[in-house]
Image (cartoon, rainbow, N blue to C red; front, side):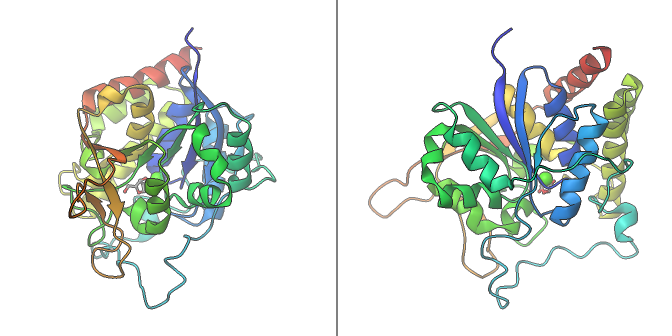
Length: 334
Ligand code: RIB
Ligand code: CA
């Protein structure tokens, strides 16, 4: 068998993060060196606990989970720079009942615990010990941990093969005024990564909005009849309900998209990203309506800006589902 692709996941678990973790841990072609957690969809104590519950559900108790940053780098230090307000939930939607992300996933508590070492220390130590270009980083939440590691020790940069991140938007309407959630939650962190020179694939909302699974596909996953497959089915259905509750009447809106699992799929199958453009990409850090916007393709007056980002504009939802189904089905038969 070809050598496995070594990855480090960075998650804010979260309902779609949970599906991404199942896929990454159960995929035979991936070697998950560790999972870092960060505050984002919910507080970091809950993203960490949720991640441990998913690891337990997948029957992978040896997977090492490292708790990361609770808060973004800078954006909450200036109380006047209130981050773009998230769109208010549709009237009558009680948060924990039908929110896209809840404090606790629908899984039993676990005896598994996070490692003593912090996520940033794990990232630095693991990358410094690696060969050049050996490890692919897959952040699917705010990128605070990676930005802190880069600022703390730039010697890690050549060790990173690529950052395949879930974040950013251009053509698809994001939840906040101008910015996709992962970037909006810590814009400075994403800009640090974009300026670092590390190869970046940005799996944006433009691409992930094509990764909306439907109820029939959720039922196909459920029929696999393993704990992780049943969890993924339940989370897909939950996201469809939450998306409808937030106004995506047909449940096909961005809210139902399985953003983070598509990002993991793109690590092994870049062809799932059916339209990409190599371009310059930087994050607006001004404290105005565009705070956190991912700005593509701008140039200096007399010279081109470096094309620092492979930006994904679309995705093949059938290829994505077939891959996710195949990973869960094969794992169930092992
Ligand atoms: O905008 C989508 C992203 O925000 C996903 O990673 C989801 O989990 C949330 O973190
Ligand atoms: Ca996420």
